[in-house]
Length: 278
Image 1 (cartoon, rainbow, N blue to C red):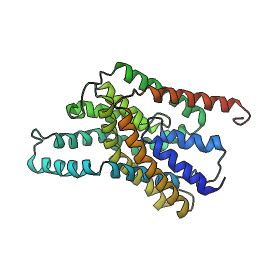
Image 2 (cartoon, rainbow, N blue to C red):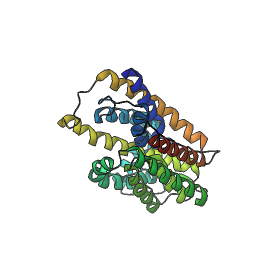
Image 3 (tube, one colour):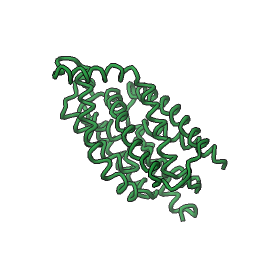
Image 4 (tube, rainbow, N blue to C red):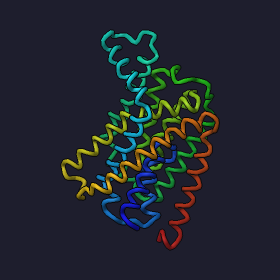
């Protein structure tokens, strides 16, 4: 298959699965494996970084108005040394608190975890683990609270849960939405907080991985055309996926994604037992 088509598909996969709770990192491992794609650049760090920058752009495009409100509100709270009763100031600091665990743990464990879970079987197993967490969150969460009612302790819980998304197959959006549901948030509020929280985390992770490109750790020569195709595809699909999720979760449970994760895991194990997997 032409490399441009591969880059397009990988960008679409990244953009969709970053926000739909089925694990983008897991799918970026499984799709090339299932399709038999061996090109070193398509599977490279350089290409992965560009795909993540595409999803970062999607977040900024979709939530630009929120950030234009939250950033000045957060700065004003520092100036006044007070949150007062301003929900925007509170939300700004809730997001800061939720981001702290990823900032502290991510740089220490990212390489170790990703080198451990890079094969299809462990990814499929983690898809099942993530499915179980989503199912329990849907079943046990009260789903009655709005985002403004979240406490700082609750934000920290969501942030700690997000660290588990370093494991391919768990899903950043899946684990953080699940944590929000466990905290009693309704589905849409849990998803919105997850996506807002993802903005600084994806930006930080992208910059952290980009340093490897600068230092030459990536090991491949960047191909501008393929990077641009993947970037645009990831950004476009990401905007659509965010809009879809926020609309979908107003009316539907997350159990639809539980079913997908289980079916995908079964398909992976089936392929592993077939001549393809052998």
